[in-house]
Length: 89
Image (cartoon, rainbow, N blue to C red; front, side, top):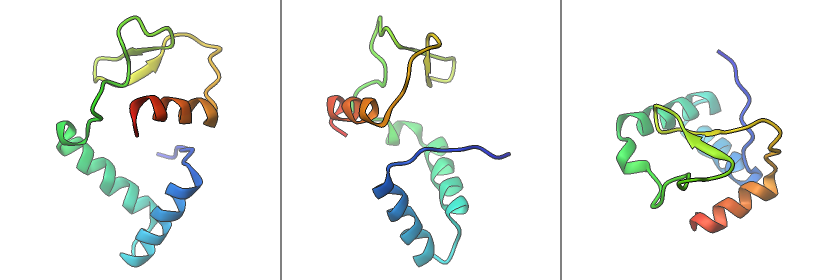
């Protein structure tokens, strides 16, 4: 299955360098990372939940994944950076 992921430039560069050092592909590195997170989700969770109760934009699905509540919300890099600052990431 193919998908598109929008990554920060710095993270993408670091991932490419890491993949090259390990003599693997970026795809394999992403798969390995996702598998690690799925094996031990509690070890990889952020300090605070991704959504707050009564969050106007997100709700949590049955798997604990934040999902946009309504259409029309534009997610931009600036918005993501603001959320990261709020979360201390």
